[in-house]
Each structure stands twice: as C-alpha cells, then as structure tokens.
Length: 313
Picture 1 (tube, rainbow, N blue to C red):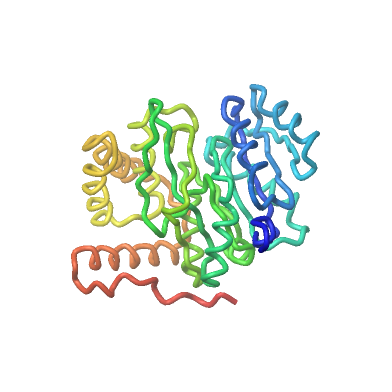
Picture 2 (tube, rainbow, N blue to C red; picture 1 turned 45 degrees about the vertical axis):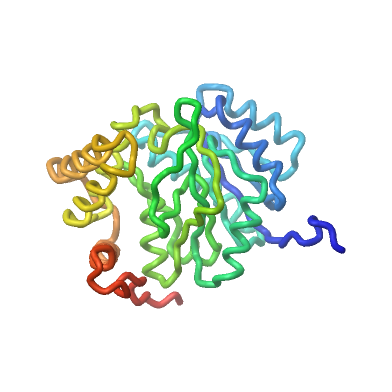
C-alpha cells in the first residue's frame, strides 16, 4: 500500500502575501504554509511599508526556508489601504511571472490555513477544468470564538484566493480599488471570460480578525465600507436591498449589520463615488444579479446559471 505522501497530487504554484503591520499574526500564517502538504514553488511576502517588526519576522523564516522571499516596498500616501494592498500583490507577481507554474495563490498575513488547504483546492480544479478562481470558506476569531463568515458560493475572498494562472492573466490581474472589492472585480471579469468562480464550504480556514477590519475599523464601520464597495461594483439597488435584508438576519450584529451595509451603499450615491469596473462588466454583473433574484424567489429555479461567457481567447 502506498503511503499518504505518495498519493499527494503535485502542483506547481506560487504564493503572494501582502503584509502591512502584521507582526501579531504573520508567524501563525507562515507556520500554516510551512505545514502544507504541497509547498509553493515560491512565496513572495511583500512588506508594504510596515512600521512594526513584520519584515524582520519574515526575514527570519526566509533564512531557513528557501522558497520564502521577503520583498519590501514603500507605501504611497495617495493610496488607500486597499489600493496599496493590491499594488503590493502586483509587484509581488512581477517577481514570479517568469517562473513555470500552474496556479497563483494570494494569502493575507492573518490567515491560518488547514494543512491540506492547497491540496484540497487543487483537487477541485482537477475535477472541474472550468474553475478559474477557487477558495475555501472563512472562520473568524471573534472574542475568542470561531464563527463562519457568510459568503455566496460563487464569491472567493482575496484573503486566500487561488487562481488558475491562465484565468489570472486573461483578466489582467487585480484592479486596485480605492474602497476594496478587487476580489469581486476579479470574479466578475473571470466569469465574463467564461471561467467559474467557487468557494467550497467544506474547506475551512481561520481568519484571526473580522473581515473588513484590516485597517483597524470596528465591525459596523467595516460593514458600511463593504456597502460602499458594493456601490463601486455597480450593484443594482434592488439587489442591494434584498442582500441587506438577508444580512440583517444571518450576519452579526443582526439587523445593524445589514443596515450599515445599506447606509454605505446609499452614501456612494450621495458622494457619487467613482466606479472602477469597465462598462461591459457593470452590465454583466447586473444581469447576473437579476438572474439570482429571480431564481431566489422561485421564478424559474433554472434561471440562475452563469450568463453565456464571452470568448476566452
């Protein structure tokens, strides 16, 4: 009988982690990657101008693990936290783009992966060749307890996102967004090109702090910002209203969470915040949203299917 190690599917992938003042969390993130059943070909940890000991911690590990590289960049004052985070990823990708790999993985510096995370994700890619982006799902550590983050099955959070390389390069990578939402932009562009995007609830990872609080914002303020992000992603008002109503009952803090999202969305209209998606993508995402609404209320359960894709070539 073959040993478990002999049955591991081998896949070449590179990993990029943007890190800004993550000294409290990054050791656990690094340890969870080192423990993976499939290690990355290269792991670029981009120190995004940290003022704490983040870079020193990474360099300590890089001395002992040849696949880890610490790369430092300077933050620009005109960039928001979210924009700078994406520019860090883009610079990291420039350092690995000439390598021969099949998958690109993005990992935030406050995520703790299960030991077989990448092995499990690659297995899903093997089963369905149309998947372009995949993730597991998040458990948040809040007040010492773990709770599951509410996401849709087709949503793939950037915090632990895995791309098929062909998909990433076809969509042109991430779009730096002032208010976040670059992962949603990538998903939309991928589906427009005919790829599928899926999260798999049976594969769980731990996020060491609530979603949306990477720059120290309290949870309701984070929900407000997520609502503003939805506006920037051209979310239709009817779909947003339905989404916020649902979140009132399934997302903590109940009621206030949904209302905070809706307030952020309406604020986007008031200030006329810039939308960074191309016009074609805006039209596409609204068609998707109405198909989902129709399917949800039972007007033809078959209506919610990915819209006929544009050419992948």
